[in-house]
Image 1 (cartoon, protein in one colour):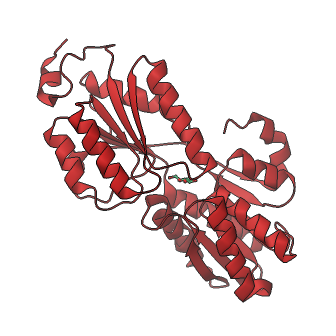
Image 2 (spheres, rainbow, N blue to C red):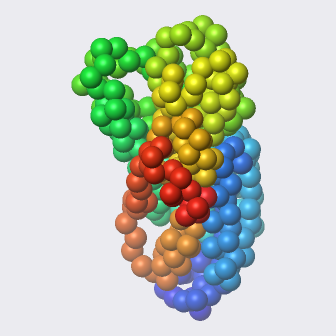
Length: 310
Ligand code: AHR
């Protein structure tokens, strides 16, 4: 082993083509169906390729991720896969990784840091575009109505998908003043929180909600429960928009309780491992690699449900 570029990287010495790598993976948590599928995909791709995996679940806490990355650095791993729970506050620890010569691969979520030499590449979805897709569907569906009141369940505060899905959605609706977001609160991307916050929305505004825009399907599924318990029909009395396209959303759509879900594909493990291997082999990578995604409606749910992988 030991190519010249490998030696420059420090941690990558003796990793010739096809060599076994030690890869640390700092994951966000286990907050959603999407996340579980993503964890599986990345873990499996790493071990299937014959590499060694060190895994850490941060339980949606930034301080746990900082600790995990420091521990990966101390263990001199060959590469770090990092899915940041929030966008800011990781500069110091990423600098430590860089100084130790350990390449960092951002997976799924981005960081908001000026110095882009602190990571090799960012592989993930275009969350702003997902927000736009959700709003475009809504404008097509209800554009003719005089007034449409929307409540919004946001993802984890400060996370890239929460910030971007809000931004993309609002960007499109800015041209359509008949749509109004009347309430917006975080449900932390979980079913339990989604249900709880929807209960509060219904309590204060019950008869005045036309649409729920939920930043992920899990919160939408929790909210559907709240709506049923309140005595309204989800999918009819209140239109439901989710993001992710997990199986649970297809089941809800097939049952007529959810109207649409914007796809966010978590199954990028194999693509990610390929990128790590290419980098270690000295190949130049694009700074930003997007995942291809679609959008699915209620009428397609029954047919597509058996083919869904997550
Ligand atoms: O970062 C991706 C988002 O995180 C998913 O849309 C959501 O379900 C997950 O928790």
